[in-house]
Amino acid sequence: MSLYQVQKFLYHLNRDDKVKAAYHGDLESLLADYELTEEERNALRDGDVGKLYVIGVNGQILMHFAALLGIAWFDYLELMREGVRQHGPVRDGVYAMTGGGTSFTAEGSGL
Image (cartoon, rainbow, N blue to C red):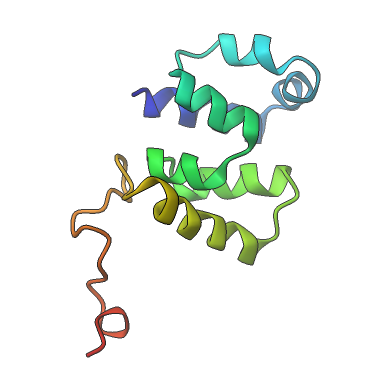
């Protein structure tokens, strides 16, 4: 998996108007500039926020992508939750799940 490349792509998309124009005009050529797996390319093509979250994309980077796609904040949060339900625990990055997806907080554990 090439999490760094996915995050680099999203960082450039979030910061560079030329990359945004390429995203809307010639996405395939833009994606070819990054070393991505087919799973990552598909998630980026589809705007699959949940899958990107599970892959391990940092939420600070991902929320700007969601905004670019016109996804409202609460919908963005739900898409991340749905991603975990559909695709399993976060695989990599700072949000990688180490407890099988169970909560370690008092409010999540019923304490």
